[in-house]
Picture 1 (tube, rainbow, N blue to C red):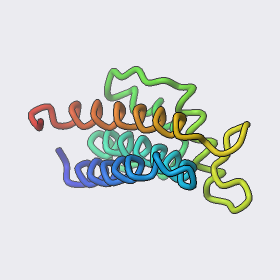
Picture 2 (tube, helix red, strand yellow):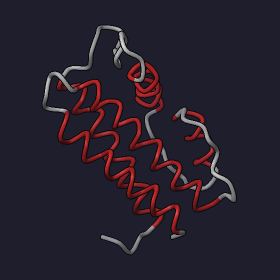
Picture 3 (cartoon, helix red, strand yellow):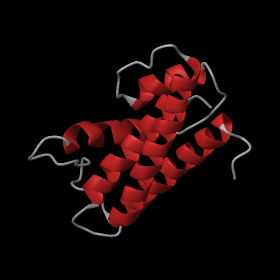
Length: 133
């Protein structure tokens, strides 16, 4: 695996750890969702870094997923990616702070985002380095 691809995977793993630590705190569920989005984004960028000369500087998961699909055969839930994209943008601005249509994600939603991010991360990590356990 190319060095920068491994750095993207390492950074994605750090975001996944942040999600795990934050998702059980009612006050931090919006930040857990933000880091879930970041984990997925960085996992996708690892694939692009492995396969392209220049990794695009875009953040939208759906667009990144389209690009990644050209290199690996993966099937991830587009609705969850769309939801995480909305939380990612809103979490960056005071007042909105990563709100779903009904408000801040609850613990169950944060757990679901964690499960999704972990599945993307583990799948991509295995595709990039199938020999690592």
